[in-house]
Amino acid sequence: MTITKTLADVAAVSLNAVRTLENHGLDYCCGGKQSFDEACLAKGLDPDSVLKEIEGAEASGAQVKDWQTAPLGELVRHIVATHHEYLKLELPALGSRVDKVLAVHGTRDPETLRPMAEVFCALRAEMELHMNKEETILFPFIERYGAAAAQGHPMPAVPFGSIANPIAMMEHEHASAGDALGKIRELTRDYELPPYACRTVQALYAGLQALEADLHVHIHLENNILFPRAIALEGR
Ligand SMILES: [Fe+2]
Ligand SMILES: [Fe+2]
Image (cartoon, rainbow, N blue to C red; front, side, top):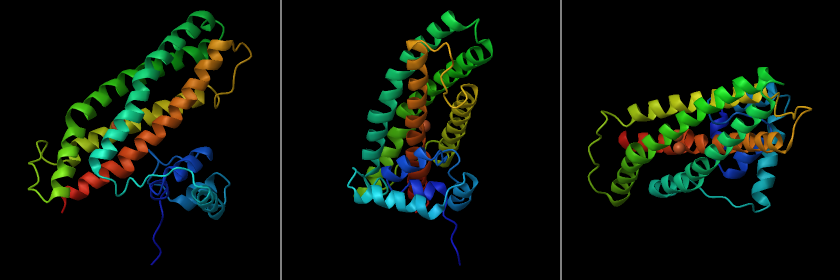
């Protein structure tokens, strides 16, 4: 029997795998359920060469952490300290840049800048609320759940019916964030700088592109590793 390897399976191996997929524009987080081979072929890439590239990165000793086996509490703290903290700093900074660019160039390029500002503002509001829900409700529960399982203690009662319920809601919000990033990429024509690009426009485009890359890794760690591990604990 042949097992279809998905983009999420490949990404879940290591951060090097994530970086390689990101470099090739392969959507391993929200589109992670696609077959790896088919996604590569659709981009004109040879699946075996992409796998070799990942192996090469592993061999070169780039730092890797096995989040499939690390304690769940450690993974939760890593996501918050790395990716949530990044968003808490970057979203307001990008928000000011968006406002500035719109004020200076809004009339020159309204088809790009107005919808981009709208999509960004909605994404920012949604992500701020989303992280708050994760940090105050879901993540503390997953940490307690993981610790109880690791210590062989009785599992705490799930206050949401099933842990799969809040997770489904978070995944739905991730898909919406993924759509917003895709829309921004489309509006900016893959972040190609417009002829009027001043320093602020350049900084905005670079910042949005970095936001996209970070959010992809962030969503991947939650959708493809943290959430399936938490759901598997409930099913034991
Ligand atoms: Fe998160
Ligand atoms: Fe999330």
